[in-house]
Image (cartoon, rainbow, N blue to C red; front, side, top):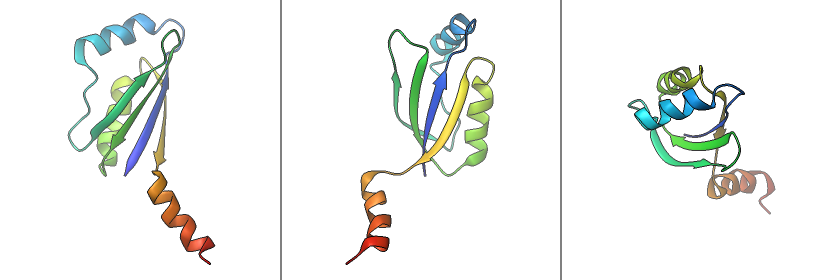
Length: 92
């Protein structure tokens, strides 16, 4: 399963969040694979797309960054998967 992790760095947390990222690279625990990570320059927002079925690893990663970031984790599907679901409802 794929998960989009969205984050916002709250006021006062930019420096410790940046230092933690630069020090570690924000690796994922075993059981998750990083598919991509994006940062919005000049803002406090970013997104990471991860894949895996280990919900404990996902909870661990969120906990590792909870002191620095406001996180939102959303299960996501791609166009092909969405089309397959739509076809089951709207098949002619």
